[in-house]
Image 1 (cartoon, rainbow, N blue to C red):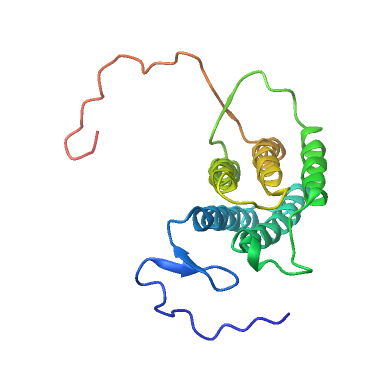
Image 2: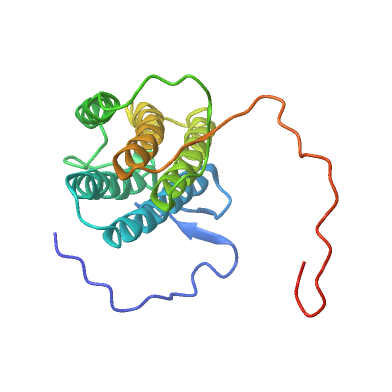
Length: 210
């Protein structure tokens, strides 16, 4: 189906509500809006990851990462549409996230995990730029999972939605480790009980910052 957008603003949401698929209007803080809004935020961060990846010297790993994230971004757009559609507005042939998409995520996790050593410590977010943004995407994905769960307690959504988002957060964690590994970048490991060393701050040199 061709889509043509000729006007960005409508002024219809200036009083704090918006419309869902099917035409019903709800507040912009409605759990359904929160859910697909967080999915949109996640998609935007994955766009940043792909942009950083494009600036990285091409390799089989960078090409594979872009392939994976391109698929995920499109699926998240479909998922956002699904979440924006209340049960009474669903239509025959509507694109929905299902078990097949979850299975692909699981296969991709296993594919990347095969290159990694078992964890012997918790991982702190960070490392290289791509890995750091993938960690941020993971945390937003977890928030999306919580938002969707709150929506599920109020009204029905697709059977595979929560499972997909849960598995996606796992994939983003593995991808962050996999990219650190393939790019030769160090991982930040959690150090139990670490404290800031006690000592004096360096004295400022006249004319220079400390």
